[in-house]
Structures are given as C-alpha cells and as structure tokens.
Length: 318
Image: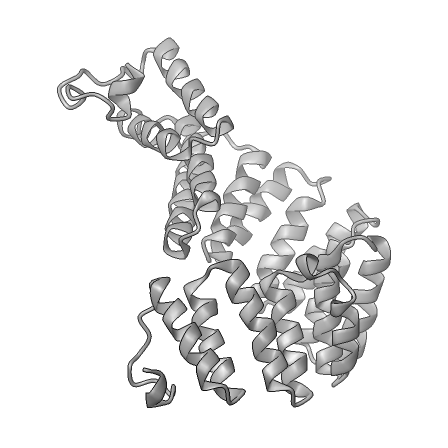
C-alpha cells in the first residue's frame, strides 16, 4: 500500500486510494513518514506526506506532518530555490493544520516559525500572539512575536513583547539581544551596544550573540573593534552570513577592499550559494582584481546565477 501511495509501483494510478476514514491505515502511513524522516529519506517522506494530504484534505495532523516534512526537505537541500519553495510550502501546510486542528499553543508557535521562515512576518506575529494567549507563561511566544514585529518596523509593539519575554525568562539573552536591535534601529547605537554586551554576559559561549554587538560597533564607527571581536573566533565559528557580512563591512570601512572581498569569498565558497558568488564578483571588482572577479563570475553561473548582462561588471569579465 505505501509503495503505491508514494508512486513506487506501476499500478499506483489505478490503485484505490487509502481511505481517510481507515484510522489504522492512516496511522500506518503517517508512521511511515515519521520513520523516513528519522532515516533522512526526505524525498520519499515528502511523496507519502503529499499523497496523504490529497486523500485526507481535512486531517489537520496530516498537514502538520506535511509541514514538518517540507521543512526537513528544505533544510537538507543545497539549492536556494528549493529551500525557499519548501519554506513557503511548509508555511501553507502549517496554516492549514491550524485551521483544521483544535487550538494548540505548540502548533500555533510552529506555524509562526514556518511563516517567519517563509518571509511572512505579519502572519507570524498573528500565530505567535494566539500562542501567547493560550500559553501566557511561555517566554518563547512573545520573544518570537517581538522579533517578527522588529522585522516589520513596529518598534514599540516589538519592545513591549520583548520586555514580556525578558520578564518571563530573565536569564535568556535573546530578548535582550532583540532590544539591542530596537535601540540600533531607533538610532541609539550606544544603548544598542550596552544591551548587546549584556546579552553576551548572559550566554558568553554563544558566538551568534557577537553579531548584534558588531552591528552596534559598526554604527559607532569602531570598525577595528568589530574585527577584534569577530576574528577572535575560529574560522569555522564565524562562517555565518551575518558574521561574514560584518567582517567584510568592517574591512571595507577601513579601506581594505581586498580583505573585504577575500572574507566574502570564503563565505561564498562555504555556503555554495549562487547569490554569494555573484556578490563576490562585485566585491572583487571593487577591490580591483579582475581575475578573481572573473573566477567568481564563472562560479556564480555554474551555480545557476543568471545576472543582468547590462550590470556594472566590466566587459572584460562578461
């Protein structure tokens, strides 16, 4: 039966679909998806989960499982387009699960995370707000809502949500880090720096918390301090886009464009992203190295980038 559901037999189109009212068969199929996910056989899991959503379009548990499966497929893919399409699909699946299932703070929170990942912070705020209403003592809901509101530029609402999260969990660095982002967006870099450093004190081993501090230092024009802060980490630990961006920006602000381009080139190599490779073209061009720029242009095209031929890249590189 499962082979036919996932299209593994020639007779699958003619086979009777699984009866959504057959609870044993449905549970068996859903367990199969779970087992495939646990075995990292994501494509097979997705085929069965999608088939289940077709035969049981009013089963909220099926759509929650489909959303989780689509997230797993996206995370496992190295293709940026697939990653994004799976994020969008997962957000839609979770939204459908919320419609079909009884209210649950956990499901609403998951739907909010999926919406945020898909680039829909407005929907995310709504889901997180509903989750907080059902589970007001959980600091995760106002934290996530506050970060989504910050992304939307709704600073006062974001501040209020993050302060609630901070009160509920005073040992967590994340509400404080979010408040640093609000201060920076509001133009108070000194306050942002103080809050970013307070967040790092709460969790000094978390390298990600260096990024808000670096952003505040950059706004204050302390570019060498940015490099001191971030380059103190081992090379592998600073291989995130946000961190490399700050390192590259600091080098550029100090007038060292080759160092900026080299830092970004390492990220482009590590990430395997076509967009990162295309940006390396620009950075090496600005650094005055046409050979490196031409090399990265070729890499970008091999990765699927189809840049504007009328771009500002010098003709020798086209």
